[in-house]
Image (cartoon, rainbow, N blue to C red; front, side, top):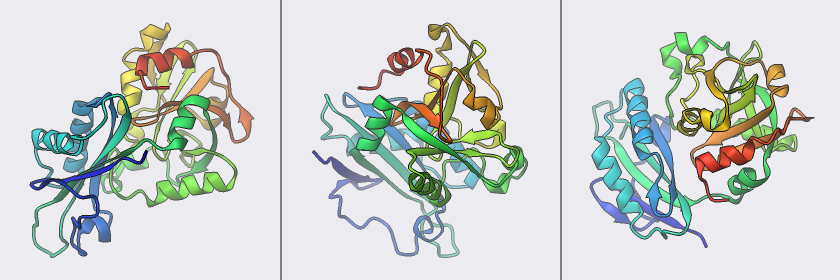
Length: 282
């Protein structure tokens, strides 16, 4: 079954084919906007407060007038009014800078509900083959250049999507972006998490990556796996030697990386515990 729904701030639920943005909206013409995607399980958004807090941080970075969190939460309720409680779906909340008129315009804000894709479900259940691709910047570049919008979840995902298409052209399922020095940064739509030396690890945000809500939820519960939690940089060659590696995202959950650049990765039995902690349907 295909699930689709649309709600617009100030208008509520509208038919999915409803026009909602002007042709000169900066989100369309410049990718000038922000978004969050929330997993919905059993009719309830998961980690909603964390997603809205991250969206507020993205808005501050871009200088966009994001509406208050309670209005965004109500918008999500509007789009979920017909959600089936025993199914999982996703909701994307978008806020653009609004019409590009040269004046301060109100933002365009809307939410869409849609099915979790078969590829995401398959990755959650079966794992993913991954290739490394260079982002073309040093690991510290975004941390010292605020105009690069490090840590913001913006609509400018053309590079991310191109990286995924490149990975597919090589027969892989996904990619990890690496710095010019070879340090792992993040996946195009996920956070990298791995186990090594008795620790559950992820990349620190001082590299300019997006702070992963799912990864942080998992690291906060590392003790349940008998591990300590660490945020640390890792070279792509070191990642290949890890005990186990996952790509973690809000909708897919944790997808175990089965191969990286064609090399099989470790499988040490942590995945079952990771899936149990995250509680995604399998």
